[in-house]
Length: 169
Image (cartoon, rainbow, N blue to C red):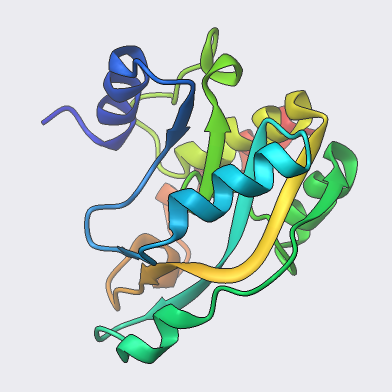
């Protein structure tokens, strides 16, 4: 009960495998999520693999979970950061919809007590990975909430983004 960052940090420390992923508790994964991302990472010799996502408010029709055919591409860290910061293509700066090699988390933690903790960490991870495997298939289903911080009006909580953006630059 110490917040999202502390839960993720505890999970990273407890992880015994070579790969780590993060899933928000109210989101849904395609049954092939881990298999496809792991396969993409191995095929493209990348330490990070990312998949497409779909937003939803109500549980989607199960037919959408069968859209898994695609050949993963490989992009540079520089291209990944451009895409993440402009938020116009895969990847973005969220922790979910990605599979990370555990080595990328050896000396890194999510900062406690701030909003947008993903943006404070994921760009550095993407940069360190050097290459990113991209699996365009929508394998991650992100639940949109009407009252979430991302869908609310600007307030002081969102001002944290300025400090995070400055650090990323």
